[in-house]
Image (cartoon, rainbow, N blue to C red; front, side, top):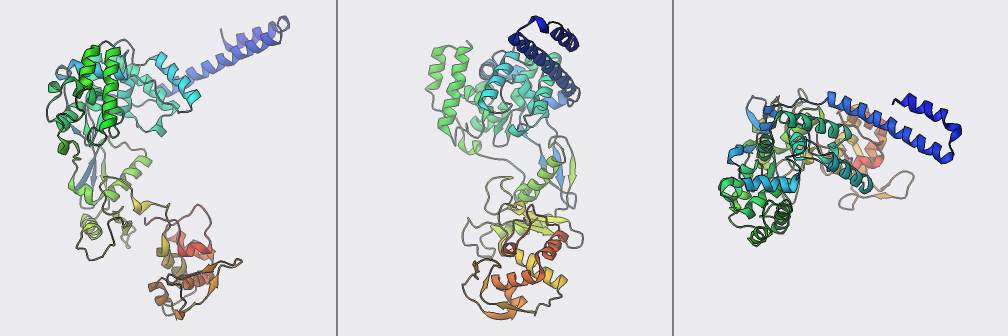
Length: 484
């Protein structure tokens, strides 16, 4: 029955119904329209789904980043992975994964409508977003062609994920899908696939693991960092036991077997040194900040990091290494007060504006961590003075470096807020050069006041600096702008 027919019947029978009957019919009509809209939206999303192939499901393609001389500095998506065939995967591991991730794996058709409905109801009342309800096949699709970030779990992505999961289920056997998944999942410390994790952690193949160790690996993909048995043994033990209980519930093992495995020390057989290793290329250490910014720009432009692209940058590796050593070597002569003292730096070629080096911090142990060179959430401090105060004065007022500026008591116009210098002193008249060298606050603000906020803003704009909020006189001592 079409929506027009339903609407026609509502009008025809209107005089034979009471108010409640009218409301019920309108609700039915509304639900039917929503259903049609949902079907149409799903059909559109399905038609625009990305292509998925055997190559996509079984492996990854590295995006290679080059410096200005064409030398490889990083391979994004190149993963530490030892592929294992289905015939070499122990049944215990297959049962553990299915028990904890998707108990209906062997009978579903790529999606599980009941789980999806349960997850939808839970999300509606729990306010947790579009999460949950995914089968093992859907998880494989997500790992292969979509982002795993929570912010990317949109209605469109979930619809495409479900459609592709149905296609994968039609074109591949359950054993193949399970093989793809076991080799695809991220296991922490740059290790992909459970065979790789078994080698890194236990220094032996999957076939030689006992039940406790197998359950530990099966539970890792949900949160590889949180369930790391070396750094978080208690969480890892709880997760292993959760997997064992799921196996009992799924009748994959007996309760006695599970209880015996739970008694095993969680770190038994683990090579801690190997488990905590994080293999990577040497150049990535030096160019961490630069590479992380390249990654961000690639993602903003819609490029996938495992799409096999070649990215040519303006990075001067010699300069980058020099910057890194100045910031991190103990004999650099710069005299950093301690290891907590941080920096962010960007080097630009003044002849063409190309970014040739970038440093996101010092004494950092995390690869691709916080990049302070591009942060705009912290004040620039006095580094803004030559850019916002003195630069515009040279440009618009023709101030020479020996221009006399006053370092005398000063309050912000229209307020009773006094401005102090770092030494709480005033040195009277001095040259602009001396005021800049000594980073005096008052001369900087007096100079900015003479230039005007409007011209100072235009000057900064000419340097590529834009701001969300209008600048004020106070910004002459510090503005929220990155080194980039």
